[in-house]
Image 1: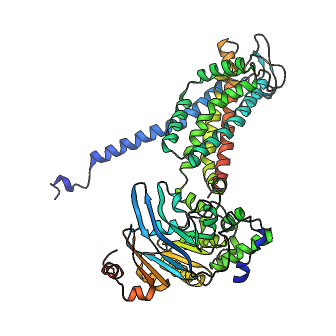
Image 2: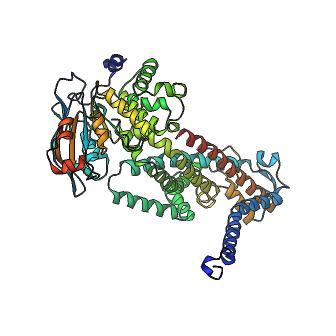
Image 3: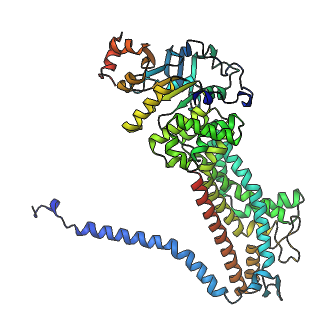
Length: 290
Length: 279
């Protein structure tokens, strides 16, 4: 029997292949861990010199501006612009997704809308910036302002939230829909009480993805909302500083690389904080949605 | 308990969606009947000229081999068939107390409230056990907290769940076992105060003990409700049915009193099915 190769119990080649595969998977998997840790560590090491309470609680000072002082107006500005964007894009995108998933009747119409949303999501941020400038800032006369920047970011976030929410709603079991409608209740009632509780985790995930993408991008707000320096607290009709544009200014004008690293670190921590909040929220909603 | 359950304050009902489809005295012999009902999925015809009768306070079993259109028929009875994309009723009619349910002015929501349906696979809604029972009621009626509590208790008592879940009414419904979930689905349908209960193979995903429990419930509930139950289990039909409709390839093969159909089927195909030679 031992002479018959088919009956060999010890197969070194198969074992080797298996081990190589496992090793490959480990290396690939560890990239997902190492990359963010390395980025955060690098920023921390290079920016630690400027990180202090003053850095996040004071406006920039010095000449050229930003050489000393902090980045408080940029944090406030980023927050303001993102709130405007979320406030506009989230309800619109979720409403569109509900329409596409629950009310639109022709499959072809849904497919076309989905395709257009995907195209919109693939449009480069620069084009949104130019569109926002041409349309909102100039045409609608909003001027360079937090409102114009927020609306530009909203345009960017809209397709991402729409696609994610649509997928989340579609992944809800068909028979749940049928059972709920069979109780003689309206479609809106079914959506509110049976479908959305199941879909919220997916919708939140898409929103966080869209939001963090938008917060971190400098280009759309560069033409529509951002200035190098502001003195007052952010308001809708006045220009603001934002974290990514401040970072861009610090680096491109070679003001202070240490301040740039510090700013990048703060931006990253803000995003991590937002992501963590979303994670907790999603877990809560998932538990409630079961 | 039964009278209390059936006499929920009628004054608090929302205005009827359609005046003709409301609770009344169960006087007509057939609560539900169809005349030459035809339906199709897309271009494919499923039901052809189906005429059946479901008498008041009796259990009508719809039987037949897989794919013969049993489920389509039972869904057409309360206008839930149109929830399936592509499915529609193409001819004939379904009549509840001589009111055509497919008439233009009839609101399908009112129909679904009066004629409740239990599906094959229990599908608890993503909320607590208590809220599951109240799902339809919260839409159709405005009740005080006290009335809601009474209704939940009454419906869960009726389906034999109360003693099992009274301590965990606020826990998610998906934590219940399959059999309990199916009884919960029954309870929430009863909370809607229907007159007819449609059951689409309610036991096919349950274990024997739960199946027996559901069959007991069917026997108890027929005192107050007209019941239509779809099954392809001949022995189950023998246990619960007063009246039997045998279907094959989208048509009614035979129908009549249960004893008559089981003891001396008129057609060879019917006899073959009941003897287990077709299935």
